[in-house]
Amino acid sequence: MSTAPGEQTSFTDYLSAHLPEVAREMVTAVVRAVPDYEQLPPELVEQDLIRRSEDNLRLFLRLLGEHREPRAEDLDDMIEVAVRRAREGIPLDAVLAVYHRGALAAWNYLSAAARTPEQRDELLAAVPQLLGYLGAVIPGVAASYLRERQDLHWEQREVKRALAQALLQGKPAELLAERFGIALGSYHVLALRISGAAESADGGRPAMRVIHGEIDALSTQALTVLDRAGGWVLVPATEPAARLDAAVERIAVAAGVRLIAGTATAAMVSEIPARAEEAGEIARLALGLGRPTGVYRMADLALQYQFARPGPARTWLLGLLEPLTCHPHLMEALRAYLTHDHNRVAAAESLVVHRNTLNYRLNRIATLTGYDPGRSEHTPLFAAAVTAFDLASADL
Image 1 (cartoon, rainbow, N blue to C red):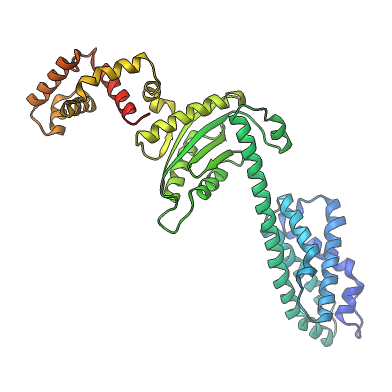
Image 2: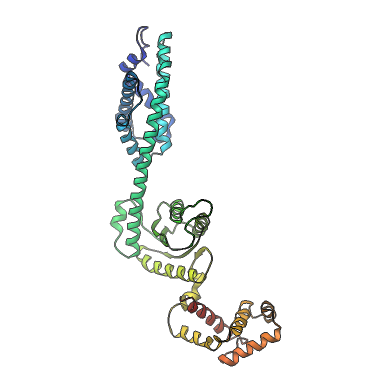
C-alpha cells in the first residue's frame, strides 16, 4: 500500500490520485474470494478487470461530487460487462459478489490510509452514497444478466429444436451440431403425449414449462420438439432408463396431466427416424388403451403393437370373436376367464355367477366360434383375439 494521505488531503483526492492501486487491491480481493473469477485467464484480469474497476471508482467519485445516485446511462459499461459474463457462463451470484467484495476491499484500503479524524469522518460520510451506489448498480446488473441468460437460453433451445427436427426427419445434422458444440450419438427417443388438464390444481404450472424444466434437469444435451399436445425428446442413451421414468412421473404430478411416453433406443443417428416412428406408435397405443402415466417400451406393448397393424392375422382374430359381439354376457365371461388365468372359480366369483353358469357360457362360446376357450391350444387364440378386438374398438 502507498503512503497515507497528508493531514490536509481528503480521501476523495487521495483516491483519485491512487486509482490504479485501489483498483488492483479490489481485483485481488475479488479473485481471492470468488472462485469463478479465480479461474479467469491472467491476461483478462490484468487487461479488463483492473481497468473496469478503475472506471467504477471514477464513476463513484463523480457521483459523490454531484451528490446523486447513478442513472441508467451511467450503468452502460457495467451492463456490457454483465452481458459478457452471462455469455461466458459465470453464475449470477459470482457476478454480483464482485461488487460487494470490491467495495469492501476499497473501503478497507481507504480506512487504513485515513489518519486524521477529519479524514475518517469524510470516509464515514460517504457510506450512504456508497450504499445508494450499490443499491442502484446491483439490481441493474442483475436484470441485464438475467435478460441475457434468457435470450441465450431461448437461442440454445431453438438450436436444439432445429437439430432435433433434422434428426427426426433423417436430414443431415452433423454441421449444425458441430457449429453449436453438441455431440451426437445414441439416443433414447421419447414420444410424449399429454392428456388432461393444462395446469396443476395448486396454482398452475403449465405443462410445457414443467416438461422443459425436467428435461433440462435430466440432461443438458437433450433435444426437444414440443407443443401443447406433447412432442419428441431425444435423450442421450447414456442416461439410465429409470431416470426417464422418474422424470415423466414428476412432470405428470407437477403439471396435473396424464403423460404417456413411448420410447425406443437409436444406437446411431441414422436410426432415429425409425425409432421415432416406433416410439410414436407405442405412445399412441398406450394413450388409446387408457394406460396410466408412464414410459412404455416395446416389451410392454409388443402384442398390441403387432395387432394394431392390418393383416390377415388381425382380420382372422377379429372374425373369431364376431359371433360373440351380439352377446355381451359371453364376451364378459371370456374376459373374466382370461383375466383370472383360466381359473373358473375365480372367474365365476368375479362375475358373481355360479360356476356352472360360467361353464355354460364358455361352452356356448365354443359352439358359436368353433374354438373352445377351455382347450390349451385354443386359449392363446382367444387372448390374442380380445387384444385385437380392443384395439379395433379403440380405433387403434
